[in-house]
Image 1 (cartoon, rainbow, N blue to C red):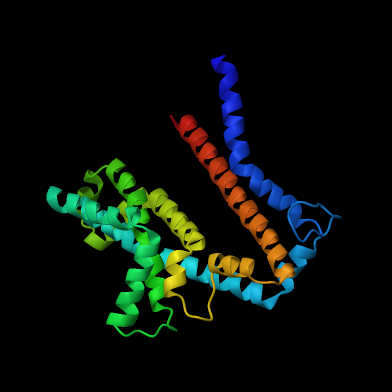
Image 2: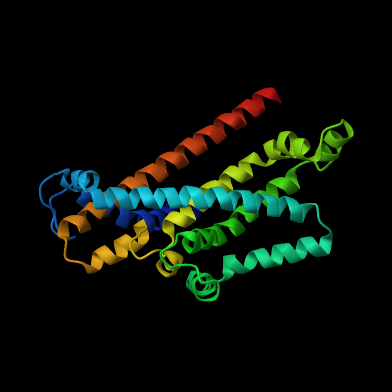
Length: 267
């Protein structure tokens, strides 16, 4: 019975997680304007997605924000993890504790706090992109920290000291010895930072300029509007995002499997 229920249980879980996405993907290839009645096959939604300048600008702006903020967050999170690891025990514990606060804290609180600090206290224009970028860096950097720290702990701590003993400067030892060892954690943190930025709604809502929209804020506003073609084009956008993420996951797993086989052959 246990052998029977395990696949059934996993099938139910996967069905619950992915069936709504699959339904949305099916409707993105139809002429339907509402979920519930499937019409003929059509690529109209994808044509609208590509040909509408407003949608193209929104997607390009979202990607630029995600990559830019993820790059800054990756640098800050990696340096924070390195600094915490080579600090004293009390300092390391304090940094780790402070790092958990943005992770646990609600996004709406973070977004509103940054808006108040930037606009009200520091008098930065609401039309500036600075609050939005700072908000997304604040959201992502703690997760980069959490991804990099385990890799630093797994690293042989004597490698850095050995590089210094051999005549390397601290910066050269960091760049040529430490960074390559923790690069998988850095790349994982960078990818997670991009995902968090793409997914964020509350921080972007409070900190973005009035004329700028991310995918999340645009989708929410579009569902309240009356442009049916835009709404259905977002079905195509959701499907495209899912397929891209799925391809990245499959390629990552394939690369990890090949790396594992290579290590086994070397052993």
